[in-house]
Length: 332
Image (cartoon, rainbow, N blue to C red; front, side, top):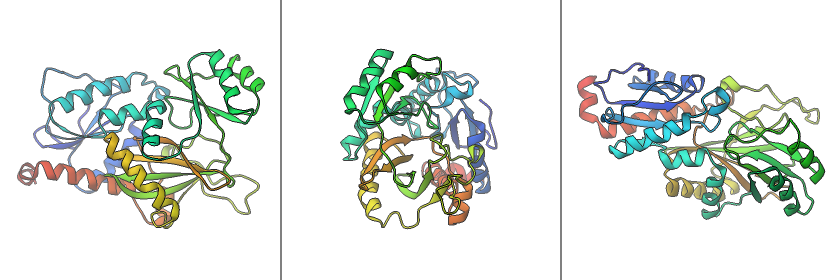
């Protein structure tokens, strides 16, 4: 695991991940604040479990979509690393519980329900017959399929008939989830073709961002996944793919959802996360995803005059300072 910027003698912020493109903005923000960090890329390297971990705080940014970048077993390796760190009493930000949520919507949905958040009706299936049969549970109404271990909208397809679903499942186009579990979910129509993503850092609301879905559901907000403004011809003017929502915390939706999302974070040991929800035609919100490997869109932030990555770097720095004040003073 390569070391960047910090020597092993200095307590540091250790960033656990598998995608260098996504961590680059965070490393820039840490460097801008003079914070020592170590790059732990789970795509390669080894781990001596018989040794004690280094001193510092450890931030887990493992992604459910790691397999799409050739890093199929990075989450499994990370689970062992987090157990090792927690066993030695290290401060882990987004530990094993967070990883369990990241890689399984089946784990996410009960946590959301328990906090009083509505989730779209969902059926999990592990074979073709069960997948097709699941359609009958929705009274002939449209459904979407999605991967249980996903990220970036993997496997999201819309079906308006049982026949259409059956033809897809039995075709070479069928794209199974890497964990073998495909979800069939009630399709919720958004009148304006948007979803909202609510970002938390240190369990505090950073902001909410509205996301245009008119070009599809692969909605990675990172700059390396950037989308141009919507090309939806129904728009009077082009819409930005990502737009920070002004005044979300004070809105009725914010007052309803934010405390319940914070309850999920407290119950499940989440420190940094994003929750995605959609409004149905009656304005009822349904939360359908928790992302613990959150990325931010710099264009949307620039227009709003905010920087979640800056807030994240400051939060990590505060966590480090709280645990190693004397060591950091000696090193400065």
